Image (tube, rainbow, N blue to C red; front, side, top):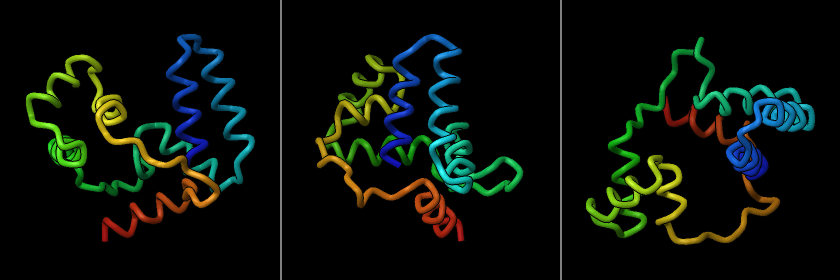
Length: 121
Protein backbone atom coordinates (compact mmCIF):
# COMPACT_ATOMS: atom_id res chain seq x y z
CA UNK A 1 0.00 0.00 0.00
CA UNK A 2 2.94 2.29 0.75
CA UNK A 3 4.16 1.87 -2.82
CA UNK A 4 0.72 2.76 -4.17
CA UNK A 5 0.70 5.91 -2.02
CA UNK A 6 4.15 6.82 -3.37
CA UNK A 7 2.87 6.29 -6.92
CA UNK A 8 -0.03 8.64 -6.21
CA UNK A 9 2.43 11.28 -4.98
CA UNK A 10 4.44 10.90 -8.21
CA UNK A 11 1.28 11.21 -10.30
CA UNK A 12 0.31 14.36 -8.41
CA UNK A 13 3.75 15.85 -8.95
CA UNK A 14 3.49 15.90 -12.75
CA UNK A 15 1.11 17.56 -15.17
CA UNK A 16 2.32 15.44 -18.11
CA UNK A 17 -0.26 12.87 -19.16
CA UNK A 18 2.25 10.54 -20.83
CA UNK A 19 4.44 10.61 -17.74
CA UNK A 20 1.43 9.70 -15.57
CA UNK A 21 0.60 6.82 -17.90
CA UNK A 22 4.20 5.58 -17.77
CA UNK A 23 4.26 5.78 -13.96
CA UNK A 24 1.04 3.77 -13.64
CA UNK A 25 2.14 1.24 -16.27
CA UNK A 26 5.50 0.66 -14.57
CA UNK A 27 3.80 0.26 -11.20
CA UNK A 28 1.17 -2.19 -12.45
CA UNK A 29 3.80 -4.26 -14.29
CA UNK A 30 5.75 -4.62 -11.05
CA UNK A 31 2.76 -6.08 -9.14
CA UNK A 32 1.26 -9.56 -9.09
CA UNK A 33 -1.93 -9.87 -11.13
CA UNK A 34 -4.08 -9.69 -7.97
CA UNK A 35 -2.21 -6.63 -6.66
CA UNK A 36 -2.40 -4.96 -10.09
CA UNK A 37 -6.15 -5.54 -10.32
CA UNK A 38 -6.85 -4.11 -6.87
CA UNK A 39 -4.41 -1.23 -7.44
CA UNK A 40 -6.20 -0.30 -10.66
CA UNK A 41 -9.50 -0.16 -8.76
CA UNK A 42 -7.94 1.98 -6.01
CA UNK A 43 -6.41 4.31 -8.62
CA UNK A 44 -9.92 4.86 -9.98
CA UNK A 45 -10.83 6.29 -6.59
CA UNK A 46 -12.98 3.37 -5.49
CA UNK A 47 -12.56 0.63 -2.88
CA UNK A 48 -14.26 -1.96 -5.14
CA UNK A 49 -14.85 -2.43 -8.86
CA UNK A 50 -17.88 -0.51 -10.16
CA UNK A 51 -19.65 -3.69 -11.25
CA UNK A 52 -19.65 -5.00 -7.65
CA UNK A 53 -21.98 -2.21 -6.49
CA UNK A 54 -20.48 -2.59 -2.99
CA UNK A 55 -19.95 0.55 -0.94
CA UNK A 56 -18.27 1.33 2.35
CA UNK A 57 -20.99 3.80 3.36
CA UNK A 58 -18.36 6.25 4.54
CA UNK A 59 -19.30 9.75 3.48
CA UNK A 60 -17.45 13.01 3.47
CA UNK A 61 -18.98 14.14 6.76
CA UNK A 62 -17.66 11.07 8.59
CA UNK A 63 -14.20 11.51 7.07
CA UNK A 64 -14.24 15.21 7.99
CA UNK A 65 -15.20 14.43 11.59
CA UNK A 66 -12.55 11.71 11.84
CA UNK A 67 -9.77 13.98 10.57
CA UNK A 68 -10.93 16.74 12.91
CA UNK A 69 -10.89 14.44 15.95
CA UNK A 70 -7.57 12.77 15.12
CA UNK A 71 -5.91 16.13 14.47
CA UNK A 72 -7.47 17.82 17.50
CA UNK A 73 -8.64 20.65 15.25
CA UNK A 74 -11.83 22.68 15.52
CA UNK A 75 -14.29 22.97 12.66
CA UNK A 76 -12.96 26.48 11.90
CA UNK A 77 -9.33 25.33 11.86
CA UNK A 78 -10.10 22.43 9.57
CA UNK A 79 -12.15 24.67 7.28
CA UNK A 80 -9.21 27.07 7.03
CA UNK A 81 -6.93 24.22 6.02
CA UNK A 82 -9.50 23.02 3.50
CA UNK A 83 -9.63 26.48 1.91
CA UNK A 84 -5.85 26.36 1.57
CA UNK A 85 -5.65 22.88 0.02
CA UNK A 86 -9.11 22.25 -1.46
CA UNK A 87 -8.84 18.52 -0.81
CA UNK A 88 -9.54 16.57 2.39
CA UNK A 89 -6.67 14.14 1.72
CA UNK A 90 -4.18 17.02 1.54
CA UNK A 91 -5.74 18.58 4.63
CA UNK A 92 -5.34 15.29 6.51
CA UNK A 93 -1.70 15.08 5.44
CA UNK A 94 -1.08 18.59 6.72
CA UNK A 95 -2.94 18.47 10.05
CA UNK A 96 -2.55 14.91 11.27
CA UNK A 97 0.43 14.12 13.50
CA UNK A 98 3.32 12.38 11.74
CA UNK A 99 3.40 8.60 11.92
CA UNK A 100 6.36 6.29 11.73
CA UNK A 101 7.31 5.26 8.23
CA UNK A 102 5.51 2.22 6.94
CA UNK A 103 7.93 -0.63 6.55
CA UNK A 104 7.74 -4.20 5.40
CA UNK A 105 4.76 -4.71 7.71
CA UNK A 106 2.68 -2.22 5.72
CA UNK A 107 -0.37 -4.01 4.28
CA UNK A 108 -0.64 -4.61 0.55
CA UNK A 109 -3.53 -3.46 -1.60
CA UNK A 110 -5.17 -6.90 -1.62
CA UNK A 111 -5.07 -7.01 2.20
CA UNK A 112 -6.53 -3.50 2.43
CA UNK A 113 -9.36 -4.36 0.05
CA UNK A 114 -10.04 -7.54 2.06
CA UNK A 115 -10.40 -5.38 5.19
CA UNK A 116 -12.75 -3.02 3.31
CA UNK A 117 -14.81 -6.02 2.21
CA UNK A 118 -15.06 -7.31 5.79
CA UNK A 119 -16.38 -3.90 6.87
CA UNK A 120 -19.25 -4.09 4.39
CA UNK A 121 -20.63 -7.32 5.82
